[in-house]
Length: 262
Image: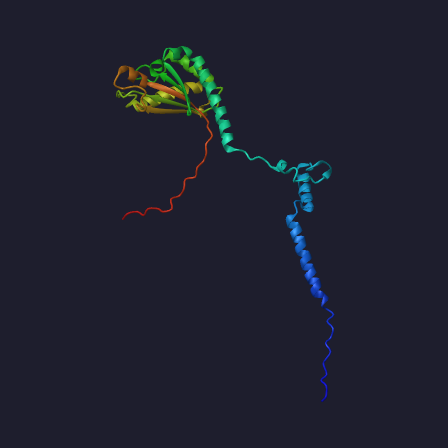
């Protein structure tokens, strides 16, 4: 019986490519891992250093050496400003400034304060100077008395060197008034406030800082049932408004808008 001939297999000369590909894959993975765990990339650091050098005209470290980031990791942290601390500092300075204004007002009006015709108070809104209307005007009138002009000029001398906004408010009691000049207490209080504001303006206070408001019988500080209370309610208040830091709060839009009823 004839023997079968077996065909000789040709030798594969490209087998080494498989091993080479495996080796390159492992080598690539090795460099990826090394790059991931490296703490400093010299090339990127030099690019950053050159950029900062061009922008600020200085190097990150003398001699162009790369610093050890592990030893100096805290030196690269820039402290962020604390808005609460900043607002607290601004608030403290503003309160101190308003306290100085109140002290200066008390100094120039000390005799009238002792007589109870002027009252100076300080609140979060600012410094308020409450002046009894009997010191400024005749009953039912809005023309300033000659004796009051000197006191108002003394106040103006303090206000003109300040930069805060000023609100002048006129108040009356509840006793009705009706004449050819003032149909009601609202008109009387508004004209009285304007008269005081105009005197301040004429004595060096910037008119852009002034606001005159007539409040009529609103916000009484005494009882309108007694002569003493009504006398105190007839007054002009000059408020030096404090500038306080504010925090803006967005008003949320309602998720659903109620439908209009037919």
